[in-house]
Length: 108
Length: 395
Image (tube, each protein chain N blue to C red):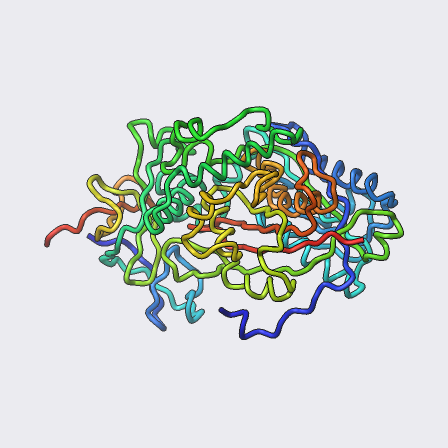
């Protein structure tokens, strides 16, 4: 699975969240590529109270911080059965723009 | 660290900080932030004996002034200052206002500078603030469950606990001791509600591992102080402090995937060198306590113990006013409430209160040197702005 991610065409640096100029070389030659993104889940939290109570109406959500070898830090909601230290891959949430789901890597 | 490659900053010479004032906190207010600024300014004039026209510098910080900034306030209050500053840096704005005002006075750009942070608060203001705090937050944090700052700091807390073996009880020591400190402070909105470790540990989870008593309560209020020359403060008969040293740093350690230290760690050596003292000389420490883990990081990063050693340090020390490490002696934001940007002024104002013998609550016996630090602006997954200042009682 892949997610849309912004890269610099000049120096290749990945950007997240999206920038208007490359965070490394300041080029504005940025492009979004749908890319497989993997990483390591470094910490996790359980959301009991959300600013939008509807988000947790069906029970708490799990939030995680993921470090990617692309050099970016990503916050994502966690699929079940993940715990800190595990390798993850990122997928877009089909019905919520901007929401990213981290899950265990699927075997191709 | 970077500071060793830089020329040392000049000292702050004959600059005085005086007149700590607080506009009493309210859980909620229908008044606008401008009212809280006006009341803070009035209290500064009352405390100093100065006329409004003698204030020729104004440095302000707020989240709820709408489209207004410092310059608009000059018109609200019929002032014509020759120097103004606007500090949209929340939790770091107190230290930053003090640093800038001290240099302006030192260099003659202004004679007497009022530094004020004020915010109103009601059911609408907090939701409006959190739901539109920064572009990165809107685009990349809120879509992940709308947890607000609690989500980000729960991740930082969880990471710290895993990395350094900290327990909830370690963070509870900070919250519980601050509640004890707040007991004598009439401005602490939660000062009348005792909190013990059992209460802390059994509280409801908000975004686990953050539970109810790890969170600050938003409120309305203001904090302020004056910066002028020591001579002027003496002429006015004011109790005053001198600035021994001050640092700030922004977006430090951005390569670290989850924040486990703040910018203080880059500059703490420079701070102690500039002040010419060691951490053991400090009589009370006022950290920015948006969450206990951040207070613990400040204690580490400012050199009171090593990285990851805060849990051990906290177990060994007594953080209450009569204790051997008086910390957030007015109760901090965890017990007073977080009056918006005034929460970022609270460490500076409380430090000044303690070393000039003007606390709202309990006095640290014989306090002469205080450290105040700041931490502000969680635009993505950590706060970006950090700073710290060392103040010493002066005559």
